[in-house]
Amino acid sequence: NRRVVLANRPEGLPDNETLRLETAPVPDPGPGEMLLRTIYLSLDPYMRGRMSDAKSYAEPVPIGGVMTGQVVAQVVASNLEEFAPGDHVLAGSGWQDYALSDGTQVLNLGPSPEHPSWALGILGMPGYTAHAGLLRIGEPKAGETVVVAAASGPVGATVGQIARIKGCRVVGIAGGAEKCAHVVDTLGFDACIDHRADDFEAQLKAACPDGIDVYFENVGGRVLYAVLPLLNPFARVPVCGMVAWYNETGLPDGPDHGPQIMGTILRQKVKMEGFIIFDSFPKSAQMEFVSDMTGWLKEGRVKYQEQVIEGLEAAPGALNDLLEGRNFGKMVVKVG
Ligand code: NDP
Image (cartoon, rainbow, N blue to C red; front, side, top):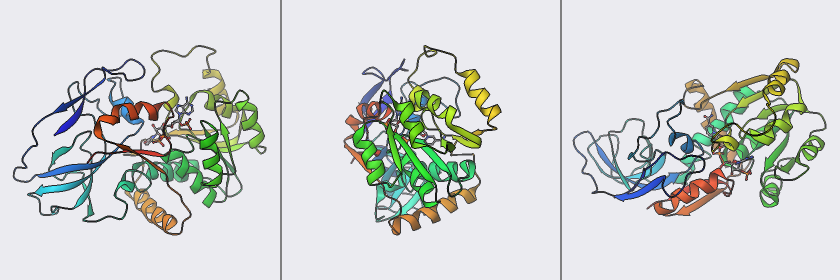
């Protein structure tokens, strides 16, 4: 049983000392337990937060503890009535080959789900984040302009496609020409701007001639500062993530943007609302998401791109790639 544990809390970007691959015996399930074998491990930006013991909405991974993560696993042996050997499950058993579970917070996907890994992406946490954050906080209306960064990633790509379905003009922001082409040509956004371009701010302004009504905040940093002057009165800003700052070790250089941010919120009467997908919305929000998304996928109205990494040993490097924008689509690790 291979597993990746947190060896040290990183300063800045995780390095070779941060995570350690270990082996341990495969455990035996006791009464009321089952043994799970991981097939796919999801890699997500929040994992950087779990490496830190700074105050957060969730407990950090303890030093020496197995890195947290959602997985799709197969039941190997079970002493639980609701789970049979061969069943696929969605579980939170983390970065390891095998894990014991008592079935708490485990979703049974059945013996042969059509796309098992989709439970980690478009039909799982990132898809639900996009749906609930956009529709319940962003409240987009037909004809409005919606802007979202990390636009080729699982959250951003889904936000933009849902906004298109709702009749909005959608402008994505992504790193590099290849991602931008995908966002427009395959995902159907109206435009996509490369945030690394020298004249990024001017390009964004030109792409939003009627200003911005909904800015779905995924990244912070330069993108946020470029968006602020373009926000229309009564704009909505669901604050979902700030990946540009996850590896910051101190305050950034340059001017203090506090007055610009607060001044914009005040003058433009902006609604800016943070959310954490696990506990911000009622149960009905998740049911609505599953019903909408299964329909849209069936009708081909939503497209989904995955990047599959081979092998648990490749997971630490792949997480850094994700944090620095070297992923293309939802990153999952094929573990076994
Ligand atoms: P992605 O797969 O899109 O990965 C992150 C992407 O962020 C990178 O690929 C990169 O894309 C972009 N990025 C990184 N650094 C910068 C930067 N400095 N400026 C602009 N873009 C940058 O991630 P997800 O779709 O899984 O997650 C998107 C966001 O949603 C994250 O902030 C995440 O933490 C948040 N989230 C929040 C949840 C909640 O409950 N609030 C739940 C789930 C996710 P590119 O190359 O295009 O720049």
